[in-house]
Structures are given as structure tokens and as C-alpha cells.
Image (cartoon, rainbow, N blue to C red):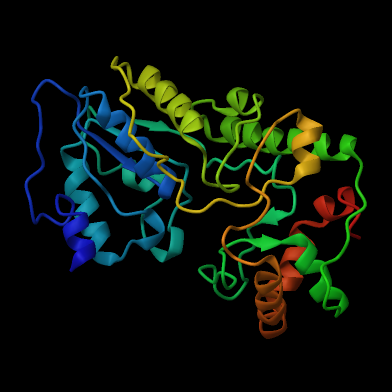
Length: 297
């Protein structure tokens, strides 16, 4: 019930507040989508309300989003494939629910690992929602240790040049996604090496750049208001000191998953890989190039 109250307008528990001359927007995607919506809404130039993250949707949510989109002027969405998680919620599928005058603007799924070269996301082949224990991210040094059957984290052997190459690869991958899906462009901003909270939780400066790009794409002018907090700052991952040095970035106080002891995380995730060897194998295959560049294999 608390969740339904949080998304009260979406679940029709409360009527949304709307200003008639403002376009009505629906912002759909992962946690980055809600942060973007907050910034767009702060301009006072659009009508919007909270929509649950798309990976949480149920059949009921599909029925509700269909109703929402029938009176939406602009769908602002991350690219999503048709029938994602078995539901008709792909970008093209949702666009079909818009009125004839409705428009679609897409924005990319944002990931940047230049300052966190050992942190990755791995999806289990059997359960895509499965996360490792303690923190919902994998560490390649622990992954390799599990593959070798050793207790201590694997020790990388990497030069600063390779760390810069990895950071540039991260931007290149984002540019590839932007081009493939025709999204607004954010990759240019990532070249300033922003300090994110995790590899998929951007800092406010990145989110604000994204919001400006979207405002331009939808043809709406307005001044973003300071949200008064880091929108995706609930968890800060360690910043790799050598990677920061390679990119010329100064970061203080980000050595560990504060206040979590690194050894506790390592041991808990080692046990996780022993219990779920399919995740370990999938990670070794997916991130093989990164592992080689880091000197871990």
C-alpha cells in the first residue's frame, strides 16, 4: 500500500495537478527516468507525475500506463525492446498508446565506469533480477577469484594508459547506444569525467545536462531548480585511485563502500558465486575484454 501511495497519481488514488497550457509528459525507464522527471518538473513548464520503474511493472501497470498515455503529449523514454520481461512495454509498443498528436523522445540508459573500472553489472541467465549480496554490483577481482577457486581478490596488473582506454570505451559504448536508438546525446558531457555514485547512478551534474538535452528536444524552455539533494546518491561506490589519477580527477573519501568492510563484501559475493556458478560464468564471458585490459586474465 505504501508503494501505491508513493505513485498515487499513477494508481489513480489522487488526481494529478495539471496546468492547462503545459504539455503533459510521461517519463518511463529505470531509476534514471524518475530523476529526470523530477528535474523536468522543477521547471514548472510540464505536467508530470511519478511512474514506477519499468522493471517493476506488472500486468496491472500495463493497463494503467495505457490510460495515462492516451492523454500524454510527449512520451520521454529510455529505449526498451518489445515485450520486455514478457509485457508489451517496449518503446514502440508504448508509443502506440499515444494520441495521434503524441510524440516520443528517447534518452539513453546511462552507464559510466571510467572511475570504477572493476565494478560491473551481471545478469543471471536464469533470473535477470538476481543481485549479489551486500551491494547490488559485482567486482571483477572477486569474480576472477571465484573462477580460480581462491579466497583473496585477484590482483590486477594494469597501466594508466589501459585505464584511460577503458574510460574511453565506456563513452564509445554510450555513443553507440545513442546512435542506434536516436536518443538525445549525453556522451559529450561524460568526456568531462563526472564523478558518479555508481556506474549507473549519475551525479546531479550529469542528470541536469540530460534534462537540458531533453528540454531542447521537446521544445520546452524552463529553468531547472536545485533538487536540494543528490537524486541518485543513496549509495556511493569506491572510486579507483589509479583510474582517477589516469583521468586527472581528484576524489576524496571514496575509498570503500562506506561503512561496509570490503572483506565482508568480498566473502559474501564469493559465496554467492559458489551458489550461482552460472552468474560467474556469464560475467567472465561478458566482461572478457575488460578483464584482459585490467590484467586480470
